[in-house]
Amino acid sequence: MIDASETFDGTFPFLPRFSSAAGFRMHFVDEGSGPTVLCLHGEPTWGYLFRHLISGLSATHRVIAPDHMGFGKSETPADRTYWLQDHVDNLEALVLDLDLREITLVMHDFGGPVGMGLLARRPDRISRVVSLNGPTPFGQPDLAAALAANAARAPWFTWIARAQADGSLDETLGGLGYNILSTLKLNGFLNNQIVTPTWIRAYADAFPTRAEAAGALGWAKGFALGAHRFEEPTADARDRAAGIPALAVWGTEDRTLAAEHFLPLFRTAFPHGIVSELPATGHYSPEDAPNTITPLLRLFLDVTGR
Image (cartoon, rainbow, N blue to C red; front, side):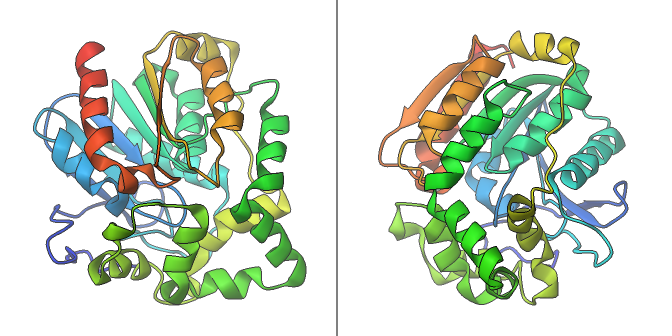
């Protein structure tokens, strides 16, 4: 767990806030005022991924970026499981604790399934959805087939399956504090100019020990074991989701979550949604293309009235 006061040489200058509503000390950033933008990170990142977006939108919006259990500045309890459904539970508890409404979800990587779980449970609290290379599972008939096809080709998922089978998964991801750069590179970013000692430290310091890598390990192991459970939306939730403004911004060089498999799922859930594919942009699109993504989101929020 990263020290609450750590700013990483001023690159993450946001006041730390905490909630215990989910039964552990959950860190979140809460900057600005206005309509709520809720940013959900994935594997193996934390709110640092959204630092440019927080700065770019907080002049006109209330931007909240929580760290999932076991990531960033949030606690990593030893007596909890780290499956998808646990993260949905935690996010729902935070949203109710802060009484967030009219939320614009901004989701990256496994933040997608977590956010879509919240949408399935609390559709009345979500007004917009933005996917940044984040899957949008929402009971689509072809969801299982798309996930299987992607996992068969993506280096990250094929490595997870192999490492679980040969017994090396726990040891490798337990050492994320040392091998974070290779893990991030396996998932995919293209802009190597972002790689500085400060940047590496910001991601590595979240996993100083094997015990504190439980969040990252749990997410990977959950796929290997089939332990993650996608939230099944009701017919009313699907109807409501189909009518809200939605935007998918996808780095076309994503080797972990291929656009060919996940953009059709987005279009099924949000038939009136907008898709913007970014060339020369990898899986970590908020790192590769912050100067493109922030204006795109600002325009989307302006055009849709928030």
